[in-house]
Amino acid sequence: MAQIPITWNGKDAQGNPLRWNTPGLTWNGFLPQPNPAKRMSQLRVLLGFASAADHSLEETATAVSMKLYGNAAYPTPPVAAADFTAALTAFSNAIATAQQGGPADTADKNARREVLIGLMRQLAGYVQANCGNDLATLLSSGFDAVSTNRASTPLAAPTIRDIINGISGQLIVRVGPVANAKCYELRYALIGAGGAPGPWQDGGLFTNSRSMAINSLTPGGNYQFQVRAVGGSTGYSDWSDPVSHMSL
Image (tube, rainbow, N blue to C red; front, side, top):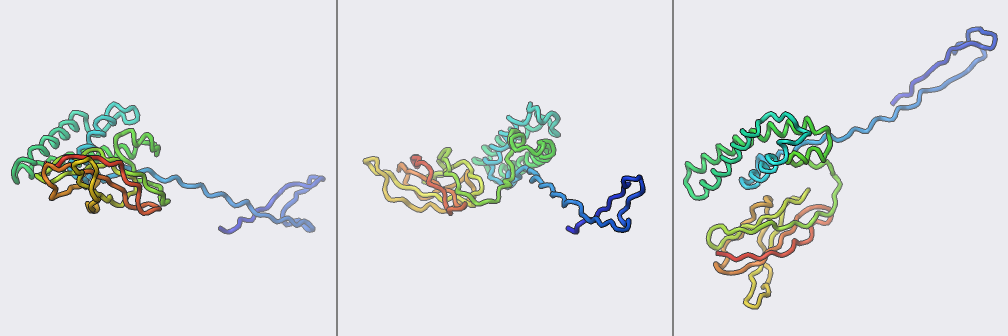
């Protein structure tokens, strides 16, 4: 930044004008350089729910339904609570129906999903505009925030929330998402008759923490699972605590 010259005008002891070009007077200086104000990062609502799996979208919408409405920080949501609850309920019911139904049921579920996503986008914009750029206030809405931390740090170990049965010989592992994780690595082992797990088997990599399916398991077999997050400064997180579940 270029320096800014300054002058000073005044009077001498006899009251005569004293100016910068008065003969015999030399005075030069510059204005101090201003310190540029550090811009705060603008918090943004994470819109990943729009591309998340059905149950992940359902979980986020449920959190928003519970935390946003009645929150003093957000007194006038653009979507009425009754309308949002109705859309969420319709989507949840459609998920259950589509799991046992045909193509028409799947199409209905997808249509109700898009309706819910549209309402959530409206609410996300409202939250972003009214959170006062305060992270705690944003998170109190039930939405997640886009991370502003670009420094690479070790990732936290995931926590296995539950394991559910899919089709015969299939188990679906669900873990809580880990911030800044690129994906998740899963391993599993068949538990023997004495209760000791056998050798670990590679279960693959998954980008969706809430739907990690392992197929071709032995029906009636009891399996132990662990998951770790991929990424961060160390490449991998620690493995999660092991959790067991029986395949049907």
